[in-house]
Image (cartoon, rainbow, N blue to C red; front, side, top):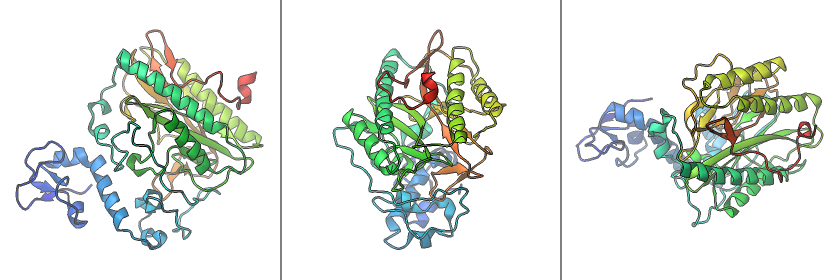
Length: 402
């Protein structure tokens, strides 16, 4: 991360703490952005603000990109993404920059950003794509004990999130696009009075994540039609009454091969076994040991780059819950804590690669990956699965019938 540059005259306030500002973000100066919001009193304040402030640079680039070929403009800087997935209403470019694809999946065009009615309560990133409270909150370091009122709101929100995911699951079949799945998720969320938390979160362009075959997580819904034999994970988060509820499941599309069946069932079992140990006094690091043991015994590997997380009034916060063995997670579970466990299990190697869109994480060897997630509440005696399956949930997992 670059350092800050001196401000010509001391007439501005620090964007982080409000004190008189003496320094300015050099990238903002290079992009000729307004000085307000780009000034800081010290290097420490600049560093503390960086995770949210850097989004301003991306937004400025989007505005200045114009209507030319995004593939040409960004082919030399794949790390910054092909700004196509951030660009409101523009499809992904058909002229794709060179990229060493690991599997057979490719990006397809994405549709325009979906509208959220004015009466829906929105998180602070809904309009400009930049989370304000979350990055600098004390809850990134302290695991919150939820109040009874917060817990009740989380129960309501997680129930809605479950019903939204179930609605999406019911439309899965060969020929349906992941963009159509996103439409179902968006409309079901709005109908329940909620906001789809991923929408515009750090500029994510859709209302849910759809991760097909070798995509581990954060796949962007697009115009690709699901094919017979695919597997697809749908990751839903709903914001309602000021809190977030988060869950995902991996589904079969048509007739799926035996290896994919084994992978998806093993991933389901990894989450189930991890949930079974949740109670006060258990170390967070134990979650990864349980998951790693079951996955490795089945001949699969555990993704290390992404983990479970605290959740509540913030989308992501402490604690981090790694899913792999011999992790160094600190702390023990206490009654009143809420967090997700969401193992990502790969058929091949555990390593991942990032597509140039900056979101889509895929397996390094192109083999398939599956994931399941629940939002959990630690109780005095054990655990409450806030996003548990309902009697009305579609019966799509054969192993639940035995």
